[in-house]
Amino acid sequence: MRRTHLAGAVAAAGLLAAACGGGPAPERGVATPGTSAAAATASRSAGPGPSSAGPTPTPAASLGPGEGTLSVVAIDGYAEWGGVDPKVKWVGTFEKETGCKVSLRYYDPRQEEKPGDFPPSSFDVISATPEVGGRLMNEGKAAPLNTALLQGYDKIPKRLRTLSSVTRDGRVYGVPYVWATNEVLYDAGKVSPDGPESLFEDKGPVLLRDRPLSLADAALVLKARGGDAGADIKDPFDLTDDQLDAAAELFTSGEDGRRVFWRDPVEVVKAFATGSVRLAQATPYHLDVLRRGHKPVRALPDRPVTGWADAWMLSAQAAHPSCAYKWLDFTMSADVQRKVSVWTGLAPANPGACTGAARRICLGYRVGTSRAFRGVYFAVRPEAYDKWVERWARVVS
Image (cartoon, rainbow, N blue to C red; front, side):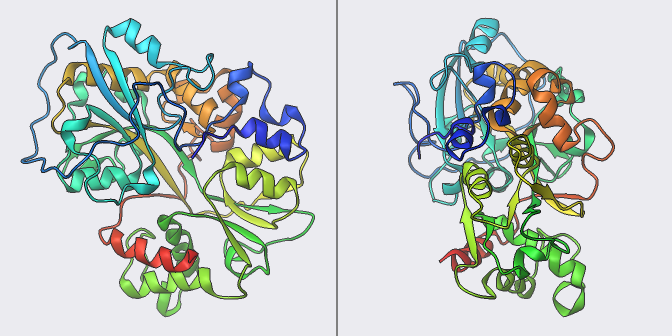
């Protein structure tokens, strides 16, 4: 998939150019995770063939000087070297500051369930969604971290540092990087939804995120309704088979064509800008862009909602651990977090990044306030994830 710039899509949809912010040109563009036009040395996969990681390693007790090189596997947009926009880059800065030359490869997290991905010998650090991170921990491919060696670790809120998607058995496996929440947006000129259940009850068209974990959003509706299907739901990411079936049924009930599924965030902006949808599952950043484009789009104030946090993880077989720890520290810095937040439209894990062009994004996500995480169920890879994938395949088929 080619990299898409939200700025260009907004203009194409007929919104004002100002809808994409008032900062320098590179900070007006937003790249969606996918496959980019990477450097000639960049690979297109996380490495071939299956691998067994062996016993879980012990966290490093100390670090030596950098090894001079670092293998990074990243979601597109999470490690920028200027290949898409020469003004959007931070990989080169890391190399200059640390002497660790980066070998950078991208992967599509939507394809993580394919067997043989992510052999631990193929990377030092990887940016992981909750689904990918859960798999790496389950298979022993991620190494526990000694957070005492990470100077910026305490700058990240405790709620993010202790998420189940980055911790296991009292150990820390991931450093949160960016996060977001799933909100219900609606065209106030066309509909007045009663609550999140409107995503499944409205006559449509309704736009929903194409991701197996979207079943958790339906589970929250079931939980609110109570009854046989929802009364026992405590965590929307921890469902019995019957609850999972009931959640999937919410997506498939009603008339065909009433619901449309999106993968590229730009699709949400285009849909509201052209008036082709009434409601959508989206993020606070979508809302901000549309409002600045003078579209009558609002967000339901209802909580709870689902959310997710992506993190950097260390390979259980990292060949360059010192450079890897330097990378983890570097990506926690306010400067890098500010850049990645503006580039992706996601909330920075480090509240110190909420200055300049990132300020508006942080306001949308309530970063640094007591309300930021209130009522948010953060995603974790379900134990029966294969069942979630199978149910979701039925939904979108």
